[in-house]
Image (cartoon, rainbow, N blue to C red):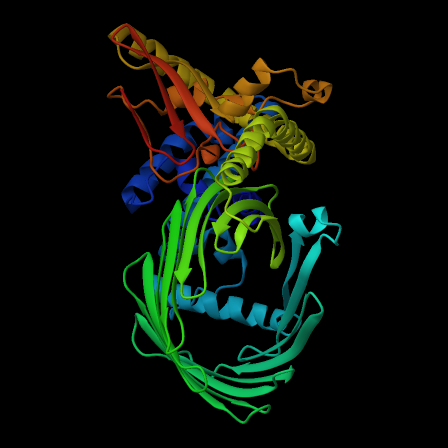
Length: 545
């Protein structure tokens, strides 16, 4: 039996987890017993067996659908095939996993699958390179207004990390900085070796105004804690620094660390980080014989695209407060603006983050803490952003998202048309039984599905309200009428149950009308003569009435 067709469909899952289509085909729960699977197979076989039809055309349709339920039954009724499918979906079945006697438990299957994937990925590591860098350009408005240049200073750093093997990594980097008439730079090379699954060591060499040679080693001290120890020697003055860092996981979302430096500039720092689904925070307190300070910030994500940030720093040499926010402008890029008030003056700071690259542009507005200017520096950006968001940003992104959706639908047009045709054929064979069930329930005052649609309901309703490009008329709607298959699934007791965690596109008579888009199922029904309506997400469970 070939597994190619269902494998291709299950790869369309947006969340990276297979949609359990085989369970949807037979309309059974992932926890279903062998007897439940056999019973469901017999129910569908009564509808889809080719021998039940005389017309050659109907026999062809029945044969195609019978093969689909037969494939699902053959996999789910086989204990080891079902174990592999439950863990990795169809990918596990088509990727060459052994089905011999040694793979008896889910743990053994998972371990074998991971070993196989590891062998496939080993070749990629040698060529795997990750670049990162940052560029800082400091501008001074007071300096420019006095007739000088607007550029106050500039700094840049770059780093390239490459895996030489699975255990060895080399990192090459450098930095340059210019401020006024002075400047400096350095080049750094680091070699990291993974000595075991719990420990690693690094050799670091820096050449520049302050040449340093260092050695670091780190190890997992326990399940929740890590220790790092290092030593570095300066070739400029011969000074030796010793460093120790202890990090511990305090909870599922927070961690703490202690960093101790002994040498020419000894100090100790205590830090804390917390990251949750929609917010993150971090803080650090640092003490030394000549200076002390504390720094902290809090970030809250209002949505998947926008966030706000507040932070501050206090110490023997600085006092400042910052507030601002940012927005994700593309899949890999984020734009952020912050307003900083402190002992060094009033600043605007613009940041562009893209992948591992950062562009930071601080703009000095005033060296003095003028209350009127400070108020304007805080209010003006937020007011301008609110105006641009309503009048420019939102319309632009809405238009761009609509265009992306249209392009995506064009690319999947042939696939969707083929899937719709298959779903229509499956519904044709279900229709007689569905009509009988619907009539029986109507006579008893039971559950009658009057209308059911599946697909991108939100996108469809927005398109109806707005003027869309003419090309939309050439594309099928992102929804599918599934009234017939849902009436077929109403059982003799007058109940309809769709199982949790199973994508509904796999149900016989369904298909995915809009691959890659969020989908919902909307059901209008009557029970005991009264109308009702229910809406459920693609993987959500549903029980009616």
